[in-house]
Length: 286
Image 1 (tube, rainbow, N blue to C red):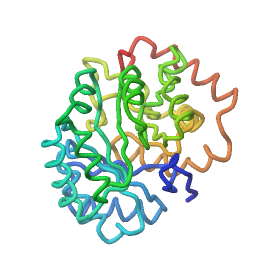
Image 2: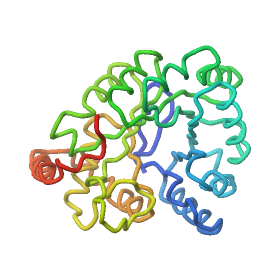
Image 3: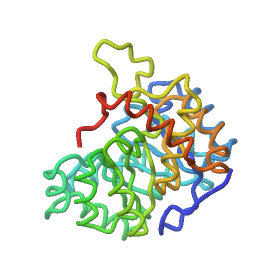
Image 4: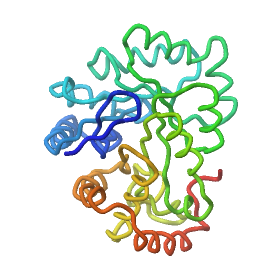
């Protein structure tokens, strides 16, 4: 599988990420098989977080035989130096590794998050200490708020940004465009999530993909492929699939088509048409 530069990190990453939520709540044998299949298909970027229940514990032994050949990203939801240091060290132990290639603030959501992280005694102290000690190589963050993402980038020159490049809101309101442009200007690496999302779940709707808090595209390959192309067109080096093996497999099977035939006017027409149909069911409020 082809690889692409993840901004200025020096990492060459495959255009599809293995998000370990895929094997959350599965058996160790299932996790081992999923990870082995991903490596066999050429995937070299793996992402996990302690908040994904047992995904981290399962990923450690599953990935251990391949660790030297792949890039491993992890996150912390802790905002203080004490809490994030504890979580970082636990994650390193669980994942049977001596370093993370990318370590991220997980789901920065509010201005209070930013204030706490960057204040004395905040989690940024842990990140800077860990980078100095060689425990982490690159510092990134994830966010679901464009406002908070932009503010975070004002406060620190992050190496990576993990952000939704959700076509429906992007085409309807321009949501995400400012983040994509700021990442491009800064030279950071953009990892795009939520590209294969259709809309929010309806209140009385059966959640056919229970690991996904919003409804993935299903049964419409043309739309799904156009949505992947949209994320790549925004400058993403790699795409994060929804948290299930079916959509991960779909990305693997169609990523070459997306790379060989980038977003075009026909794709945009289809995305705009579908974006109007789901405009009343956005997955984010800002």
